[in-house]
Image (cartoon, one colour):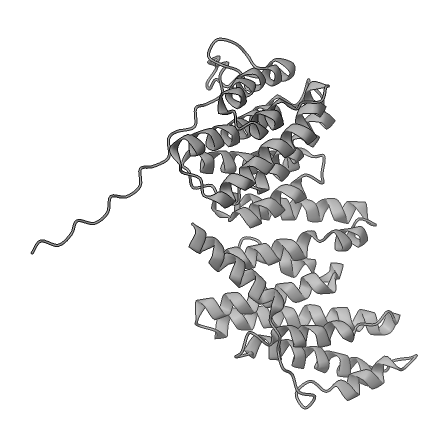
Length: 379
């Protein structure tokens, strides 16, 4: 798990930090900079803009040294302009050339890893340009099989600065949000924690049935990963719990039982993971620290809102190293086999399935036993 995470982080960071050495002989900056000085543009000037964008995107697609790509991206970004004629042609050219670049990567690059890097770098460019015209190119890549591509497709599709522009037309914004959520719905079960966090945060922005359903699905995936001890990046659950809490508060006690149930289930599993992990010695330091942050953050930012009074028992139990007190508080909040907890009681739900009534949250299974060491070869 640690190796997978390191590979993912390396890939994402490497894509962000990549720098590409572009010579002025390849990307003709002199011509584009002359066009940028003009007050009125001609058809020939539009052609210069298109050729500039074609040359720059082609360099990004065909780069051999991926440690050099961000210089090309910086050149593209530095040649934007607010001049109306220039900006419109620049946007149209960017859309056309980036679309062609993505297609070229798909059809002409046979090495899968290189293809993923090229597409991700083009998505980073889209994210940096923050142009509403380019969003559809990013949305198409959300269902991609590669998590780094998904990550940047979501970044480019949901950027807050971009959405400040998109939101000026509420009808178009609503349609785009629906498209993005539909794309996210295809990938929730198989996405990395980093991707799921972006999905959850986007769903948290909207007060619609689709957004609520998507956030519930993210919570269910995280619950499932806790159950089989495959969960990674525990810290993201602070955001998921906070987003669930916000929707519960917005919906009120009469319409939030499904949200509250997932909140209680996920929070209970985080507490159980911490207690079992400590007792069994199965938590590495990073995961332990992340879990502590989740437990305390959710108490401070969520429980007070949900129950109407500030809550500090979880923090005090953790600071005292008292796992028994932590379990007792979990029982009070979420319930036991003999009595309903404070949160289920307030929001009118129980943990039973198929019409059955159950007052206790599900029990987190024990972690899988470590693999036995290989037997020594016989002499």
